[in-house]
Image 1 (cartoon, rainbow, N blue to C red):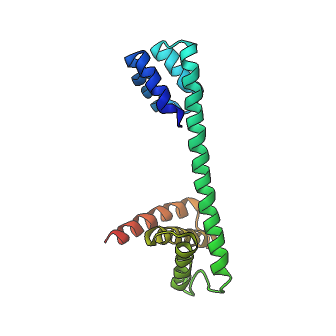
Image 2: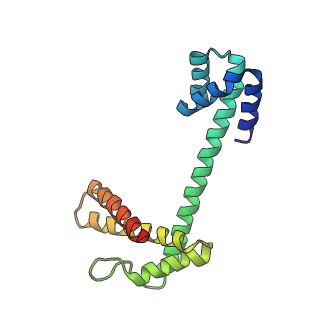
Image 3: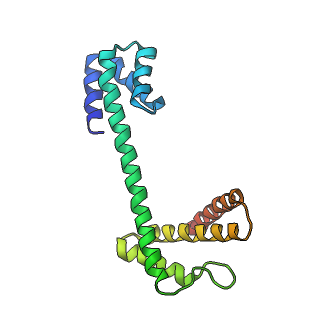
Length: 166
């Protein structure tokens, strides 16, 4: 990713349209190979010019993918540690009415906030997401379809965002 601005600058100095052509192909390319093909086919770049752009774009995409995976793994680690910690207290996840247990939710939120230094809003969002998944899993256990559960999750998420904004 750090080489991309240098590449753009070098290309822009060589020919003014090159930077725009590169940017246009990056918008539609999901790999270095696709970028090179776009540059060669659409803008008549030579292989010697498209090659470095291809490698730089692929490195940028790979870096972005690794970063997204790291964030996902970190979020999962946070979820696992806090659910284990709160679960060990003996608090039930759901109340007798099948609704989320507010005490469990509060303990989960506190764990996210205190243990990982998250803000109130981020800790609340993560705890709410976890509770929504628990409700969806309970719905599926009771015979609901996973497609219906997914639809319910979308509705619950939308409503929880609206409620928090009020």
